[in-house]
Image 1: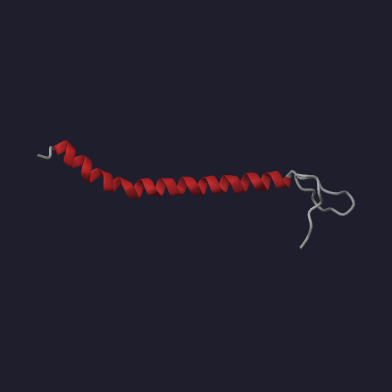
Image 2: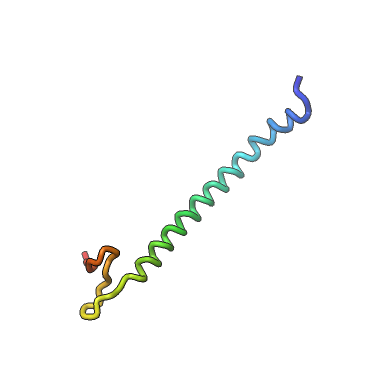
Length: 66
């Protein structure tokens, strides 16, 4: 015999699944944006060569223009 509370739980789970999936996707996108922003901020802090104007990388080498 299915009780009212048990029936309610079964019907509520599928309705929440798309909501949870959207929230997880939004969280993944936000994490990706944060990582991109952090990388851009780190690159913006790289020192620049006084002679040629090229930026140094994290390991101290000049960047190359391909």
